[in-house]
Length: 83
Image (cartoon, rainbow, N blue to C red; front, side, top):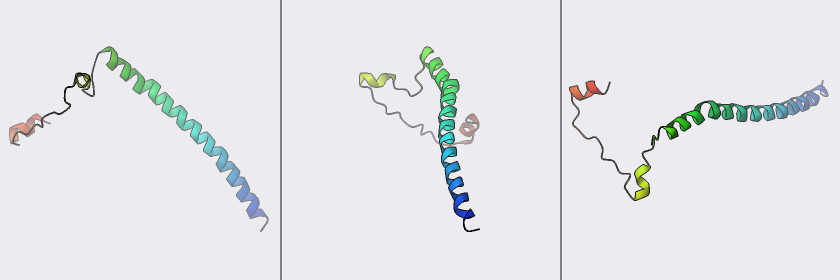
């Protein structure tokens, strides 16, 4: 039985090395499909619609990225508007 354990261990180590490569390839394929089917078309639509999701359009002209916070006092009517 002592001979059987090292053989099983070597087979397991070899199998794990093969499976790790398949997992790496599978991850790349899934992320590529995710980008190609979801992120890419959304970015293309945003670009064609001239949307500026990060609000960066004015930064090239030296404008500031600072935005004042909405610091109105919390009250019941305001809370109803946010839901």
